[in-house]
Length: 503
Image 1: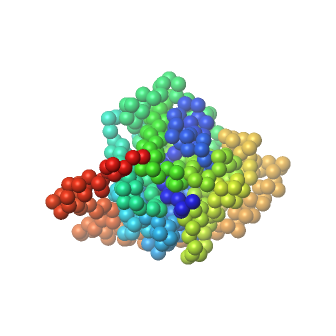
Image 2: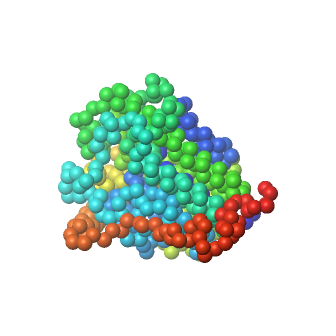
Image 3: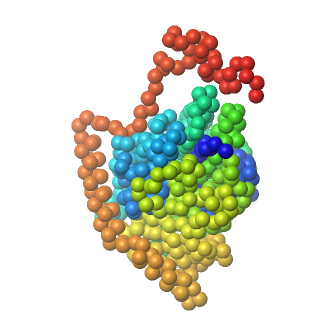
């Protein structure tokens, strides 16, 4: 087999719990399910930070966020840190990004040879929190309960307009690759849905019986971080009623189906371009969504709905299987390097482990997931997670520890950290957390980077504005039919299969 093409489809804020492909009885995701049926579904895949930009930086680099100072949504992603796009590009892959990746800083490519869209979020330091003023809201943006209370139906939103462009341009570029004989390629198509606001187009809303929409399970015992999160998004003072909660979940389910439809559109393009048999398709997300579970919304914590992500891989050489062992997004970079046959040693030690032995042979190459959260509503210290075997351990020096047996208690209702029957397990995790994370050192570095970023941003807002936001290049003089080429050349170059070629 020649080196396969790679298509990575990334959703934003998609918890696998809310997909039919992972067993939800209502949510329709037939395209995800079809890929899972012919490939590998990971049932315990986690993000490494339950927030957009930090998670994506880990995904791109195979590094945990405290190693590369990817602390929050205003953290710069340094151009000097290699990504899988760099390595695959050096190995001969055409690398392309269509959609969101929330790169912060002047480098808006990070190894991608081309980028088809701008990003949906700002590339500057505006969204930098302040750990020295934890109750101060970030200027111009902060989660609150408006997204829940205003959920419903609309003809369009800024998110729909963006994702339509992402899908259209990704599909067109893959067909162009087929026309031009480009191989191999690595395309990342990254959508903003089903991220809040919870507003859906009518045809996707209509897929669901509103009265059948399930409601969150009863609130679990509140831990200190959950209390901070509720206060930070005003959920402690704004209590949505049952209708508002059902509206939000209905719209979220509809938007999950919308993302699944866009996935189907891209897979269809691979089929139509005769690329499907030599393309590995990976479906994942940057983090999950609480959607009212435990009285929480959005993400920013390490409970299952926020921290787990879908991870489905299908294509040549991939086994049909379900994998229960934990893994995380940092494992994708070494996996992609192995798929691409990258010969060079990584320039930085990787925190992830290649999943290819699992994908190709069924051997569990990775059995743990590590998470770190250093953004808004943290208590001025990192909130961290170790997921290994049947247990999840959540550590923060400011809070009591949390230990959950996910095999016996998948809803994380019983904290076993002080249970005498689990004292040895809790002590071992506590010792490991103490070795892994120096809270005082991390706090000092977080605050130092925040001060630098706020100083830079304040200066950039003074005088003439120079934007880091990506502006996709386009030369309309070279598109479609122009006097510089013949009609026949255009017809043959922009048709697949070419005229006269039978499939």
